Structures are given as structure tokens and as C-alpha cells.
Picture 1 (cartoon, rainbow, N blue to C red):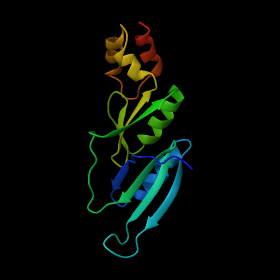
Picture 2 (picture 1 turned 180 degrees about the horizontal axis):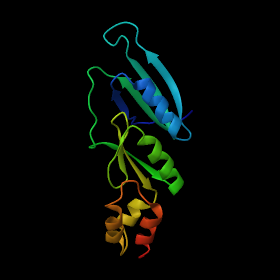
Picture 3 (picture 1 turned 90 degrees about the vertical axis):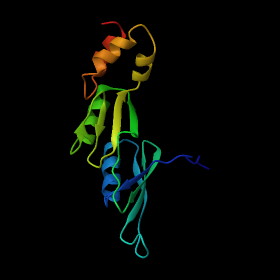
Picture 4 (picture 1 turned 120 degrees about the vertical axis):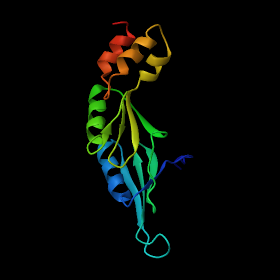
Length: 155
């Protein structure tokens, strides 16, 4: 029996639950739509709920009425093992969205993401060059893994 994920991110979207789930599934590896339900009757008639997985993490998207705006107070941090992975996620998630700073972006649905090298938290918290890594990162929007690594190594 598969383990049940105890905490599931729930996205309240403005009539775009299915569209958003398909968008995210198209970008992330090992992702899929699990189920989709469109309500025919009752107070939620016409709304949809879509369960989906991104990289094995379960999410639910709902067509909420009224629409509620997302803020940067909550974001999804994605740890990337290569610059190619950073580039792929960044380029796709910013399409129709907004680049922010320090690896942060807001996608076309208003969801905030942090696209970072896997080792970045350790580089920022440990060692004699943590401040240098921060200085190099601050002016960046999309993160350059090689420049951050060089700062971590004292370059």
C-alpha cells in the first residue's frame, strides 16, 4: 500500500484548474493528472477539482469562486541538479508570468516558485563564503548555478 501524503498543496484558481494542472504536468518530470471532477449540480456547479502530481508530490487545483489572489508569502521551492533543469523550469514557468529576483518567479496563474540549485541552501548557510554567495545571487533573476558555485568556492 502506497504511503499517503499528509499535507497536500491546494490551489484555488479562477476557473483555470484543469488548464493549470495540465500546464504544470507538461513542465515537470514524473508528473500526471490523477483525477478530475466537474460539478454538475449544487453551489459549485460548473467548477472543477483536479488532483495531480508534480515529481511525485500531490496537488489539488480547484476552480474557486470568487477568485482569490496568490501572494509571494507562500511559494513552491524546486531544487534543481543542473543549470539545464533550472533553465527548463524557468523558461516554461515564466512564459506568461513574471521574473522576480533571486530565483523567484510568478507564473501565469499567479503561483510563486523558487527555482534554485539543490546545494544553494547549504551555500548560503555554511562556510566562509556564504555572504559572497548572497552578494552574487542578489542581482540575479534566473539563478546561474556556475556563478553561485564559484562564489561558494571563493572565486
